Image (cartoon, rainbow, N blue to C red; front, side):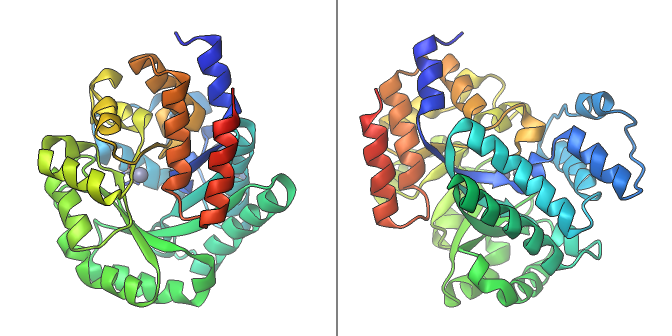
Length: 336
Ligand code: HPA
Ligand code: ZN
């Protein structure tokens, strides 16, 4: 249980979300609705049965269901509806800035054009900015289970829409697909003036975090919780202040940790590492940003001042401009 004071603070504090796969925000109800209008029949026949299938022993079991869910997304309207539903959650939860991942290859491989995907997502982001003041940026991720040549092809295609993207990322199956596999494409990403991020140290080792820093030259590490296996790496993360976008409910659901208490959150905070709290794939893992904050508050009995640090970190670690960051940090400092 968490106290009313903790609960109220979590809701009241403005937050940024930096690790969110838009395809992972696909709630079963919306998935069924879109499948129906697109004439697609689903393996699970009811919303309840689909939700029941969301039990995973590892990352791969999740990815299999997640890619299957994404198959019903065909038209611009589908990507728009998916994205707008996520942004409505942001509005409810006081998430005022979102850096949204999407997996272009999951769609282009099925014959859905890059343009269809980005138009739908971007129109929803624009609407949320205009109507609710939510700011955002978009980060295509390369699928690491596919080849680097496929990633390069995707990157070249993405350049047609370059003004829509702040950077590029790397997701999917970490085991067997180390950072070194994508060194060339990440160099191309930087040569074209983009930032980069990569999933590392989720199921894979601390070495993948080192290699993402040194070989891929990322500006942020997604997950990165396995960094605690390596004292030197923790010192380095504290020194260079490359943020970790930690996703507590995801780590629990995918059995990266067996209990929330095992998450190395206190170690990361004590070491002064720029740790942030995010939802990853909220429709699949049992909660959006605020549910993640609540889960760690319960597990670690966090004070409002510790929650304040995490909320401020979410802006510090974001890709927004310095003036904007300062505005939000000042506002967070003023919350009782
Ligand atoms: N890890 C790797 N790939 C992913 C994830 C994740 O947590 N979510 C969606 N794709
Ligand atoms: Zn992720």
